[in-house]
Length: 52
Image 1 (tube, rainbow, N blue to C red):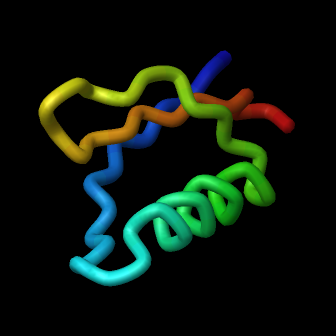
Image 2: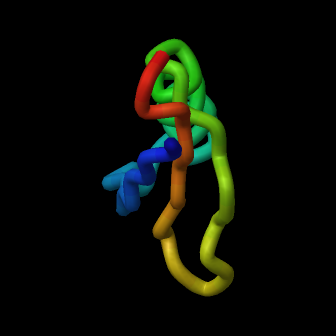
C-alpha cells in the first residue's frame, strides 16, 4: 500500500534553488519519492510504501 504527502515548501527569496534541493533531499532521506510537481504552483506530491 502507498501513502502520499502534499507539501507546499516555503523557500523565501534568497537561494531558492539550494533551498529547494535541500527540501527534496530531506524528504528523500525519509523514503519519499517525488510523484508530481504541480506546474505554476509550489506544490509537490510525494509517495512512499506505507509498510516499509
